[in-house]
Amino acid sequence: MLRADVAVIGAGAAGLSLAHRLSGPGHGATVPSVVLIDAPPGPLRPAPRTWCFWESGRGRFDAAVRSQWRHLRVRPPAGPAIEGDIAPLRYKMIRSDDFESLVGRDLARSPNVRRLEATVEAVEEAAAGPRVLMNRPDGSRAELEARWVFDSRPPGSLPAARTTLLQHFHGWFVRTARPAFDPTTVELMDFRTPQPADGLSFGYVLPTGPCEALVEYTEFSPHVLTDGGYGAALRHYTADVLSLGDLDILATETGLIPMTDAPMPRRVGASVFRIGAAGGATRPSTGYTFAGLQRQTRAVAAALRQGREPVPPAPHSVRARAMDAVLLRALDSGRVDGPDLFCRLFARVPPARLLRFLDGHTNLYEDVAVGRHAPVGPMLRTAVELPRLPRRPAP
Image: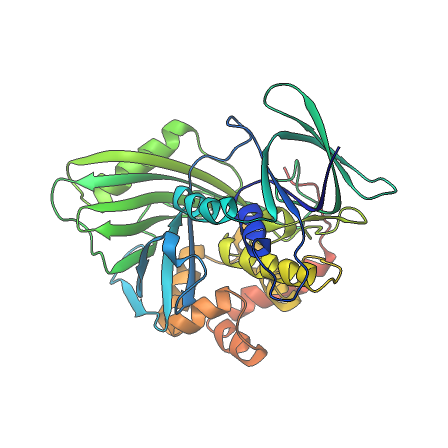
């Protein structure tokens, strides 16, 4: 029987971040023993992926930041582009491989964190505390008894919700034969893509040089596409919209993020919690997760070091989640035009303030100031009807 103060299940962004914050000396505070359980190579281990977020100044994981920008661009379906300087913020991109290497090096030197490769079969409550039941890669079984368990694995199903959309995307890391990108500016939302019957679509370009970029096709809609559908959409976007010409596809990435107003339970046992996307770190209206899970894991680590009950906080305020619920319903019902709404906000709200709004860092007055640039009538009608809508199981 293995024992530890803290068991962290899953070595994605949330699990690695929490283990990293708990590693090393506590400078007078409690130093818990930690076991980080990572799935063996295979279908349970996430594929390489990209995380983006914004912050001012230097950040904890800047050594893993592949690129960063201070200019964003949003393109409406027709007409001139909307550009903005987000200073003092920076839009940052981290590749998961770089993040895992950085955090892995620090964890390897930590005296209080142990890494374990195993498939978690169950987490059981017991009188002495929760027990994690696992299978090792060699087929042997193992058990870990811990004081606290933090599970970052994706949930098997989503809670019932009034609205559930899917943010799904496919991207190509490309190299062009000629300079084709502005390395100083992110194409955050390019709505010159054909719009689906339900939801919205846009292109997304993260340039890392004049000839290299991550180019993605993204939809907010009820259903994912086939592999052929994503390929056709990206070929149209790169060739017909961006006119990139000859290009090499260096790598690909695919993602699926639920955008839901369902309450995500963070406590699932007396001493068992969910963190990361599984614990509500994803902002429902945008799909951004990395910044939310950093706030969550920072608070959990501080509580553990101070000997307090480490209940993960909600990364987004009640007011932010209520506004997200209205936006999701308005988009899903077709009551508002998605491209028009986002273009209107980026055109009329200072970009740094809008990003702080999207990250839940604005006060009530600023929220009202941003909200008045949305289509007021449709949003108010949606807000009035929302409390009467039943919550249904997610498809």
